[in-house]
Amino acid sequence: MTRYIRRAAVFCLVLLVALLVNAARVQIFEADSLDDNPANRRNTITRYNQARGNILVDGKAVTGSKDSGQQLRYERTYKHGPLFAPVTGYASQMYGTSLLENAEDDILSGTDPMLAPLPLWNDMTRSQQPGGKVATTINGAAQRAAYSGLAGRRGAVAALNPATGAILALVSSPSYDPGKIAGTDSATMSAWTRLNRAPSQPMLNRAIRQTYPPGSTFKIVTAAAALDAGIVTDLDEPTETPSPWVLPDTSTVLRNEARGCEDASLADAIRVSCNTVMAKLGVQVGLKGMVSAAKRFGFDDAGVRIPSSVSRSNFDTDMDRSQLALSSIGQFNTTATPLQMAMVSAAVVNGGVLMAPHLVDRTTDKNGNTLAQTGAKTYRQAMSPATATQLQEMMMDAVEDGTGTNAQIPDVMVGGKTGTAQHGVGNKGTPYAWFISWARSPEPGGPEVAVAVVVEDASANRTDISGGGSAAPIARNVMEAVLKLSDR
Image (spheres, rainbow, N blue to C red):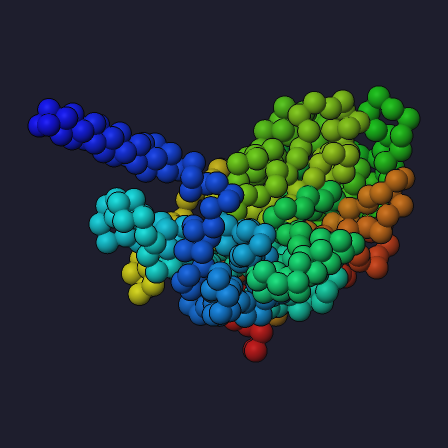
C-alpha cells in the first residue's frame, strides 16, 4: 500500500512541476504575444482606467480627460481643439494616437519606465504609473495669430526660435476637433468617417506632413549657394542676365513677372524676385553645389523628427541644366514643408547656423518633476556667417522696398521673401502664396523669430506680390505676437 501511495505522490509531483513549468512558460515566454493579442482587452481596459497626462502650452493644459462611465473609463478631451490639433494630434479609444499624443504616448499614458519609482518596477508589477505631462515649446499668442490669420483657408504656418530651434507656432488649416473622435460611440465613428472623406483634408497636418513647391522663397537657398561658392562676390554687381532668358540646352523661354530684371544684381533679384537671375545662378553653381546647399538647409533628409516625423522636403539630385534652373527657383520637382522653409529663414537670421527644430520643451511626472528636457542642438551649418549677413541685408531690402512690404513692423528689423508657386496641369492651378521671414526684437537681447506661411487657395495672380498680399500679413502678426508687439 505504501508503495502505491509513494507512486501516486511522485506522479502528482510530476504533474505539479509540469503545471508550474507551463505556467512559467506562458508568463515569461509568451507574455508579450498574449499581451499583444487583439482579443486581449485587459491592456486596453487598464490603459483607459486612469486619466491621461496632459499636453501643456505656456504651462497650461490644452488637453484633459473625462470619466465616461464605460468599460474604457477615461476619454480624452481637448481645449481649443482645432487651434492646437496640429500640435497635439488625437488620442482615440478607437483609432489610436497621432502626433504628440503618439510620440509621447508612454509618458502621457503612464507606462514610461522613467515614471516608475524603481528600475524595472513596471515590468515586475505589470502596472502603470499616473500619466506624466508634456510641456511644448508653443507660444500660445503666436499660435492664435497664425490660426486666425489663415481664417479657415487651406494653408499652414510654422514659426521657430532661430537660436534654439524651438517651434513657436505650428498651424494647419482647415483644422478639426480631436475630441470628436476620442470615444467609442456612433458619433465618434461618424466624425471619423466625415473627417477622412472631407475634400479639404482637415486631419492632414500641412505644416509638417504636406510638401509644396516653394516657389521664389527657395531663391534664398540659391542665393546662399551662389555666395558661398563665390559665384557672386558683389551683391550690387550686374549679373549679365538677359530678360527673358532661354533655359540651357532648350528653346524654352523663362520670363519674369517683375520689372527691372534685365542684367539685375543679386540684391535686386532678391528684392523684386527675378526668375531669370536666380535660375541662371543655380546653373552656374552647378548640380553638385546646389544639392549640397539644399541638403545643408535640411532638404532630402527623411529623418527629421520634432518628435513626430516630418515629411521629406525634396531637391532632386539628378537633373539636366534646364531642370536645375527651374529647381533653383523652387519649381520642377523641388518641394518643401512649411517647417522646412521656416528653417531656411531661421538659418539666415541665426548667422548661418541651423538649429534642430523641436516641439517638446520637457516631460515631467504628474507633480511637475522634470524627467527629460530638450536642449538646443545644432542641426547643420547651412551657410557661412558672411553669407548669412548678406542674405539678412537682402531680405530686409525686400521688406523695406520690395515684394514683402506687407510684413513691415514699425521700429523692428524684419527680413522676408515672397513666393508664388505655380502648380497643376500646365500651371493652371491657383498659385500657392508663400512668405518666409524673420524678425528681431528692438530690445537688446530680445527674442528672434523665423516664420513660414503658405496659403493654398490664395486669390492671386502668378506674381510674387501674391505671397506678399496673402501670406505676409499672417507672418507679420505671428512675429508681432512672439515679439510681444501686438498690443503696442
